[in-house]
Amino acid sequence: MTRNTLKLNPAAKTPKRLPAGQTPARQATPAPRPASAPSSAPRASAARPAGNAPRDGAPPRPLRSRPADGHPRPPERAGASRPPRAESAGTRSAARPASGATPRHRPAPAPLPDTGERLSKKVMQLKDCSRKEAEQYIEGGWVQVNGKVIEEPQHRVDHETITLDPNASLMELTPVTILLNKPAGHTDGLEELPPTRAGAPMRPPARGAKVPPPNARLLLTPAQRWEGDASETRVLKRHFNHLEADVELENGATGLVVFTQDWRTTRKLTEDMSTMEHEFLVEVQGEIEPDALKPIGYALKDERLDLPQVKVSVNSTTPESSRLRFAIKGSHPGLIAFLCEKAGLQILAMKRIRLGRVTLADLPVGQWRYLAGWEKF
Image 1 (cartoon, one colour):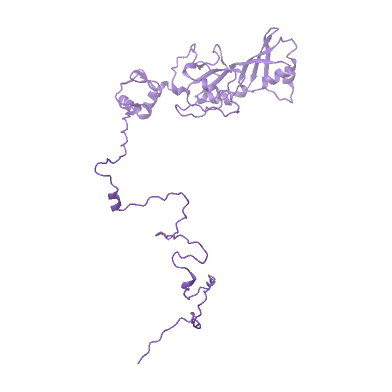
Image 2: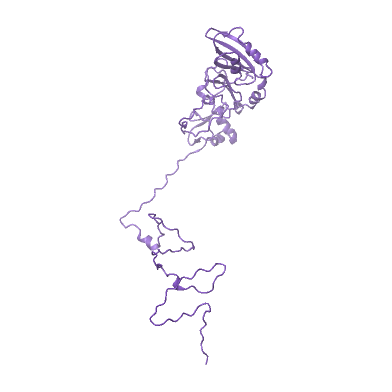
């Protein structure tokens, strides 16, 4: 006859039998073992309260549920609303409105209006040409939409009447050069205008900030063209794009400023600037004595100053003011003010009237004209 034997865990200790009438003392929680030496003995159930049972003297702790991904949820803040739970099929059916209620639906977006086709595509079909040539015809001002000249190839048309000038030619799409009589207080236009969005208002300067002087490029508009312009060039919008200015002029001075699209003119004004003559009319205060210009001659001969070639003469003189004529090789802003200071002369106004062989002539202040075909710098 075989007897069943019960195998005990050698790590577990046999509880000590107490005398009758004596209650067992509360067992202390065993200290955790270090991670390097794990124990195979089971933990005592009395050392850790089950469920939500608090320890001796500790407030009850709320139960925390662990989501399916295994990461504990963050503690909820007071007053924070929990996101709604996903509704089951039965809950959704119960949440439907009653038979008499009308459910709210989002309005469908309004259909976009028909914007038509690009004008360049219509001109391609009308002229039987390439897209590039169609854009050149439009930018050249040869295309009319309902009797109005349109110069934007991206202009949208639908059922409008499109006509092409019978004298349309791509040979006239040559770069232009613009001569401006810059007013005093404007910059010379060497800086480009900041890009602005169409229809966006200009942002006023910050409070207390110094307002910069206006740019001379702001005057290059069709309305500022001189009525006495002898050139037969038609004003087009493309004439005001990609204009370069390479000749400096002081902000306080008036006179000739050049803007060009022609790379040949740009090279002439940059490479030959040191040998090109600039002519100025300078108005000074008081009457000019015969020996008043000698200090200027001494300064020009001083080798330590290394000044460019300058010719100065008296154009007219009165007890109130006098006018001097300066002819300077190259562009040297501030040179005239330096020479007048050497002679003790106070400048009232300064105007550049000639640049190379191109003169300002009768061009009014603040207006511009095209460089004629016979004019050369």
